[in-house]
Amino acid sequence: MIHETTIGKCSVRGVRLFEMRHVLDPLRGNLTALEFARELPFVPQRIFLTYGIPSESTRGEHAHRSCEQFLVCVHGECHLMVDDGKNREEFCLNRPTFGVLVPPMVWALEHLHSPDSVLMVLASRPYETDDYIRDYQEFVSAVNPEPRPSP
Image (cartoon, rainbow, N blue to C red; front, side):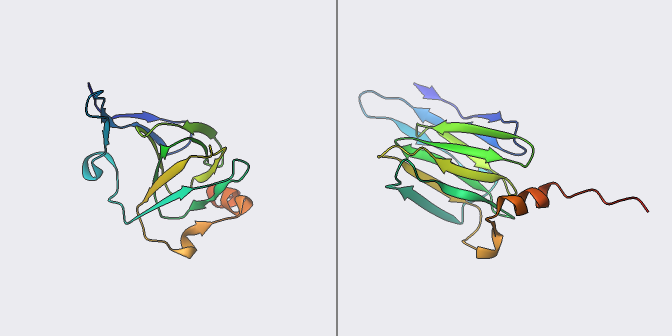
């Protein structure tokens, strides 16, 4: 049975939810596919995996100024919280067919990792220290600048 890719929206600005194209085949095994040029808004420049994370620990806890990321828990499960400074949502990443696109200037935090979780992240840019905002208050100030008083 073939399931085509569907893309859903989220209340957090720019975040999109992907149920990726997948084939369920009880005889040969299952397959999940994502075509970068057709389905993602970027061609990945970097990939990394996080695993062996204690369940009480968090990963992420930052926003990117320019980098977009696509997150898929390819084994086990973890929770992803996304926040645009006004709206916040949380998702359970628990199957290799479900991915979340996190655009620039969205705060992301991964937590509640199962002991066997393996989170794969595709990034639109190479690692650049200056692209990270690691302080939540700095992030909120950047996405919600205070209005200037009128002259």
